[in-house]
Length: 126
Image (cartoon, rainbow, N blue to C red; front, side, top):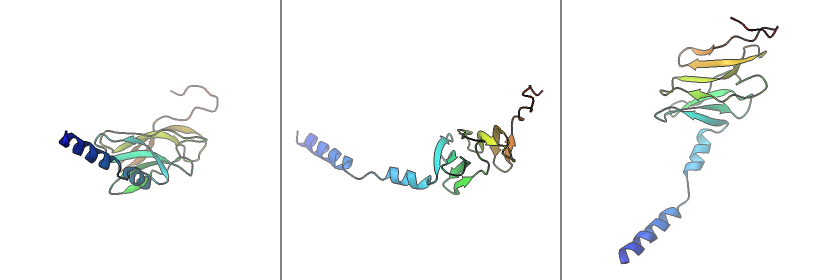
């Protein structure tokens, strides 16, 4: 009985400690919303909280780095990330911001537009 009371008292004391993880998490992603995590948890992708929802990539070494293209024209996309953290997929706006498309950002090469814009006639493109 004596040991179980001591164990309960120790557990309550641990629970009473102030939480620090939330503050650290908020500090790491100040100015952005984390939305995807690599398989080993070392790389995070998300959108900035200002400036047109620009996708970002975060690592402990680099911090939050903007990937430089607004997520879309008139709204935001939800970035995804590859298992190894080297690729980010997101809705991106065109260079001239006249249309939105699917984009793939790759470490070392930057953005590639995966789909062409819809033709002005609204027809299909082959």
